[in-house]
Image (cartoon, rainbow over all chains, first blue to last red; front, side):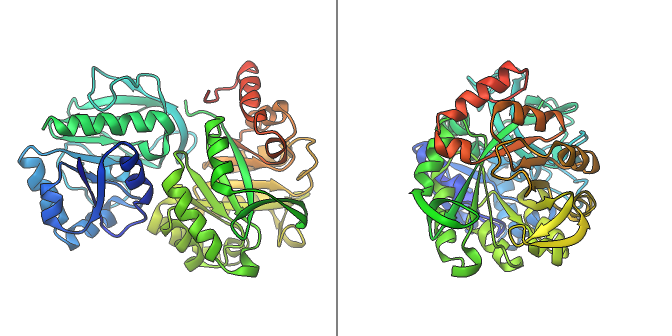
Length: 199
Length: 246
């Protein structure tokens, strides 16, 4: 399956790329809106701030390409800041793509960043997290999306409950790093490829 | 809750893992990726690669190692050792390191912490603080800097470090346990996670560091000697009631 990782110039996508290759996909990193629109699955990953990520996407009109895909019912997966990017305004400053309703808030916990392995508590039967209830996955973030609609598919406990994943039609997001979450992470990416194949 | 982490640290020279005492009598103990993969399979929660020859030889070997590690590892890793400026740190993160550890350069040019955090996020920025008798030391412990480690850690976190890697030079290599007093003082002074380092010899030492408020504990010689010690340590920690990943 052709997986296209949106390149917005922040950080390094090598680890995400390799993880998708291990899962059996053919990942490419691209700044081309045409490729982003046409991919079997488009992935937004990377590090940094929502605002700089959004500006990076806009520089090559990848933001429009992602919105067009979503409107056409083609799957998009956001990882970490890529998940936050699907939402609205962020406490960190700036604004996401606004494809999902809700703000991005600073994590409220005794220790921030929320850094390390934490157990997923599933809500319902999410396609991307099938078989992963209670699985430990790796988090490294200081901000988290707070969806206003009922789209959370997993939470974690870190001095309070936090949304760890969402699914809403062709849009999915995970706040953790599947590419850095060992075999549980590989399982998530495998699920993501199966899910993407159904759209 | 987020689990307490156990983090093996690998010393790297010219692209190989080495072991020695205070940089003397270095002995080749293997390929970094092979060892890292082994530790990962045995339950390491993260890894640290410390480039102990960086300032002597330039960054070439470590950069290609970071690229390979980013491709092949499935757990997070930090790279540090001899990071001499913003460009150095940026190069390591751009090569695929999940986090970069800055030590002396952060102490001398603390604005580097904010610059890295702005570009890569705080979660990618580790401030390594080496201490002797509570005082910051640099250059592998040789240069005392006349400032308290607690005070400097507090400033580093405020400026953008997302984690403090706190090494007690006094305890390092002794296997007599971490400096718990220092660990507790720093963990109370900062909101970011603290990684205790220096002195690990047995599970009770790691438990002591967690009890003192550390989120993670670095281990080196005990696990290099016998990698199978890693899952044993985690099982022992679990028996002691600590929330660790199995």
